[in-house]
Image 1 (cartoon, rainbow, N blue to C red):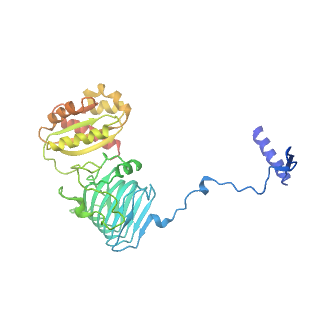
Image 2 (cartoon, rainbow, N blue to C red):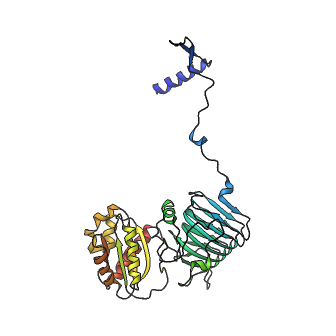
Length: 371
């Protein structure tokens, strides 16, 4: 307390005489007096916030447009919020990551939205075809939307009808970096796990698009004469940044296999390599998850194999994949031995217990992610 009051007293005494004072010294070489301190000609200090580039709200909005191709190129939003409203019959491409995006009162538009760190919210929209990657997906008072979706949480529709969903399938060179900048994992995609906040008895407000649906039939590539011609996009499922999963559709086989990669420098690349190899053998990717685990989680999920795995979960999140098809368990064990012998993995041991492995892991992962 003594220090506090002594400082206060000092500030008070300093204010008693506010007259600027100037001290001078004589230089040895010139004899001129040089003023020191309280130089009234000094330029005012500049702070970091004074140097920030001025933001024009119009750069983060698309409003009142009709019959045009518009959007934003990579590195134009850089994680800012974005608004789209009152657009009709437009092709809209946002090739960048953002914080949140709201789309209001749009009709008959085709929309691509790059990774969104937070939520994307469609309100009062009709006849929309879109490709979206986000943390949260919501619609309210919308009609007839067809959505190719990557969503880290459970998508929610409210007072919306005629909603159809498919798995996100898209590529452009910067997309992987945009996912990272938005804090989204390409392996956490709940595109088919829709929650209808306002269900109607005897009716279905949403459904899944046919598996044969091609993204470019819904959201065409940018016109070659538009400003987006330099963006090298592809909707080929084999090139998609997000793995194409079967989701909630009926499985073709009763045999599934759990394949888990433990954290390592190449876990993402190895997961992709496994998907490609399994696909060439005719197996289908059902679902994927990337989650962190604690020692007690490992014991509960992997049970008899837990002791050998506990030390590996301290290195980072694990990536798990469910693959489906007759003979998939034996095929995955062979793939693990031939392609990933130097990598720490878990593979279901036999087809009699593989379904339990799948249920144990993905039930845990859903609980972990609040699904």
